[in-house]
Amino acid sequence: MQVLAEGTAPYLPVDPDGFRAYVRDHKQRTLTPKLMSAREAVERFVSDGDYFVYDCNYFQRGPSTLIREVIRQQKKDLWVCGKFTYVDVGLLVGAGCASKVDCGFFWPGATINNAVREGRLEVFEYSNVVMTLRLQAGAMGLPFLPVRSFGGTDGFAYSGAKLVEDPYTRKPITIVPALNPDVAIIHVQQADMYGNARVFGTGIAHEESAMASKKVIVSAEEIVDTDEIRRDPGRTSIPYYAVDAVVHAPFGAWPGNCGGYYGSDT
Image 1 (cartoon, one colour):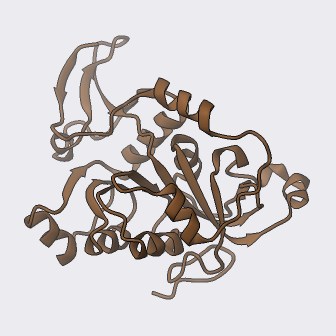
Image 2 (tube, rainbow, N blue to C red):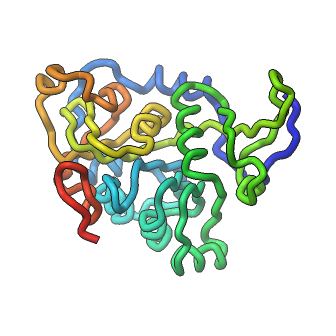
């Protein structure tokens, strides 16, 4: 495949086979209880230097309880997958937790601008759909996915995307590298103690984030019985075998909203 142009930004190394091996060796298929506190979950599964993804944002079903715990524990040098976000990234940067951001939607502000100006933060540009497709590629076990957007934009030059010759049509097409984050944190409406999780209403990439990541922490408004999950399995968005920790976190998206539970307080 001929590369016609490529962005200059670094990206998380693409290793689909390595990710599959990690899942095979570390993910349990047995129904093992995973309930724990936010403190224990973050201590065990979020490490300094991790590539860190979360679904949704500060205003809409964002994992606010877990993000505050990451800040409280002063995790360092995180590389953040920042899609549809700006407040969350600002909090993580302001707290000294994040040093790199793959940016989908961004609202710079003084905290982020100052961090970039002072060399404490690197920002790599993508788009919301591109970041979601990168996660989808990671979840599918692919090294990249082609996209019909992003090529020819200013952001392309500051990303890890490549412009290649499509081997079928011989026309230029943009490809973006897969993402297999070290850890994902996701807030859901309901989960059982094993990690079967339900998301109601709006979502961005909760399924892709869970299936693409090595470690997954789910926080839930409600912990429901597994018999309830089994009565209606079609409502399960994230399966138990993708999840490493379950945190009972009522108002876990506050001050944002959580569809069907409470509205935004911002």
